[in-house]
Length: 251
Image (cartoon, rainbow, N blue to C red):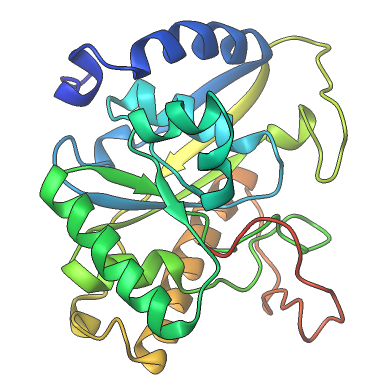
């Protein structure tokens, strides 16, 4: 096991949270992480996982902590106003995201990107923006939040895939399926997505679309490896499949 980042070895608010969360999640899921060395030990990064269960943020958070980095997510701004929860989110360095106009969103992205770089932190962003609508749980069309952050300041864009969480909590399922305990969940980290030719074009929609396509392709390839099967040739697109996009904020 590689040396852990100072993020997880120095006392912080993450410690008491980890003391509670890690044993509970470990009781429910047996998380097996492949290629942990591909997540940078130090410095900024944008980590982009697939998303098909309301439980998978906990899987991702525990996997990232075990690798040796502090798991920080982009979260809805409204959550920061919730008593206690808002305090925890602020103290752990989570990033608030509000619905905004394109101009306001661009300024917000630049500010958030600079803060990530300055503090050498990583952030976890779900590029699909919500649970996938694909009937077989393959990644659907991505949104630009993750790549916009990465392109703004040249932050490494790391794809991740996880599989097995659906056995614990299926998509739209209200409760957890706890028996048997310690269901296996596989997590895999990929090589950084090469978007070097698109750097500095975070405000260019064509560049954002191209970078997002590369990212979603990388995530899909990782998930194919975990599932040992090929994804459909055409990625699910809610707008063309007559699905209404609702749920998690586009981050």
